[in-house]
Length: 415
Figure 1: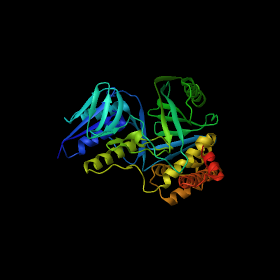
Figure 2: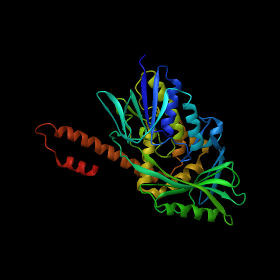
Figure 3: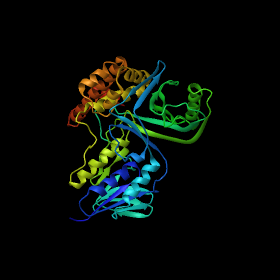
Figure 4: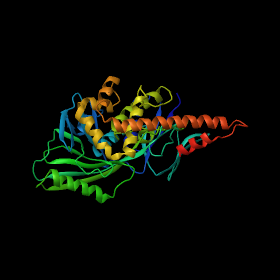
């Protein structure tokens, strides 16, 4: 078999995960080149996920929680999440481990360069960098924005944006067995806003302020919210801030094209690996990497490897994204109803897209009907207008067929 060359554009979570799976699984002579501006080794981010078993060695886990809690103005709800556990991985340890594994394979190399362009011509796919052009059989892209497919449903683009403080208290104030997933006891200001508290010792925790919205805040606003929260719920306690981290995660129901070009494959965030309504991606990226390597090894086209067998889950995501986009302040009530009326493990199974229709029905009957019915009506109306518009366009393309007033109204509704 001819020697293959795979170019990994981007050395982050998805790039390194796919590179290692390729190195471990491809049964033909293979060269793997990872391109990035620098070899990532620092704590530039923190990944959390829930699972019945972690997809990485236990020594990479910064902390594990078996109890999860939710808080709102009515108090705190805490439950065991068995058979799941909630895991935290810090990027520094994970990056170093991944590079140690990759360095065992002679066919894997790293190119320190800035990526300017990813494209394909008659000679095949290539990456243009400040160090020149590099070509291969496949380019796996995790850095260049992907194109999206046209949808008959409304599309949304929010950000889950946040700042987190790694704090140390002067006395024991945290419960390291409990992960506070959402605490809505903060002013909503017309958006969905909450605190996220992950203690990993009685005195140390990651305290994060998170917002679902279209616009980002100033750095001072995030810091002020965290400081106010600590003052209110941990009074008479002094904290030292050891580190800070900030970021933004796309929350979109847009369907990303898996292939940018015939041999340019989109992976990770640009391949649609982020769960639209939660922002969680680490576990999905690990599953994606395994499936991509398997399909490439078999010479098969890589399709939507993260899609579920049921199209209903993307539809659920669209409904919630509509509510968070147009009536963001109602998010707190929806999440409150969700967590107060259902066992944590049922919610986590649902968010993993592994639930049954019966389980989903039990969840939905406990949610406020109003926002979802309004969102459903708008979605159905939009789809009807899109279908009507497409049909009228087809008719109007026929010589002698006029564009009537109804067609013009349909077009105006879609703008």
